[in-house]
Image (cartoon, rainbow, N blue to C red; front, side):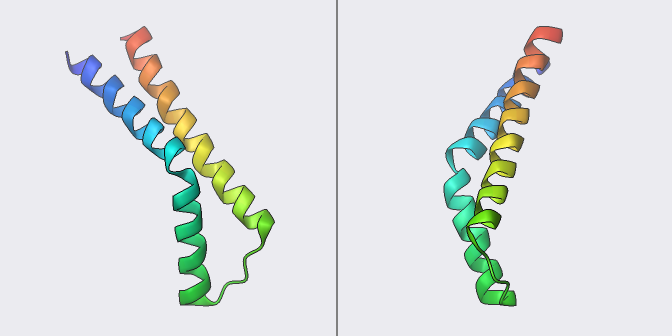
Length: 70
């Protein structure tokens, strides 16, 4: 049962990251721009969103690996 809970948590975090990647990216970029006056462009936005999507996919894979490997 413990393995199933860990797999579910990993899967849920991964799905949440993937689904909210656009909102997280926009929020972080606007925060950096307002608080620290960091100039952001399209490349930074794409890189940050790609990183968030990658982390979400890794959490999903972690959840599946917990189910498969026990």
